[in-house]
Length: 96
Image 1: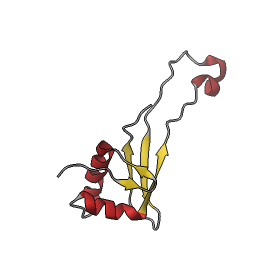
Image 2: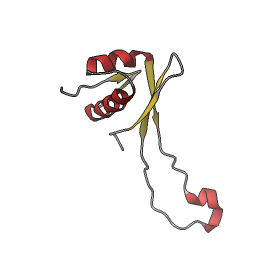
Image 3: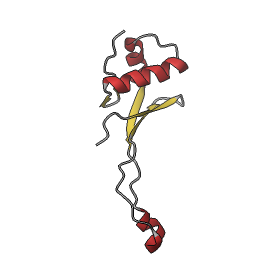
Image 4: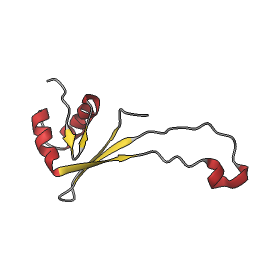
């Protein structure tokens, strides 16, 4: 079964992200195909979770050691917009 791109809300997942979501949902729900996953995702929405980029100097004041700028890891959170249900968090493949 070839991976395909899944739409969740206004976000179109990449093939890698879609495959990761498929594996997560398959453990939780009875989903056997990407078409069934897409149908299930009609009730879901998503949001991008950006990494927190607060420099240590702001937190620790002047005692902070020097640090390199780190980008952190961006995630996509997928949740049911209609009812309290399972939510999923997958690593975004677009790490700019």
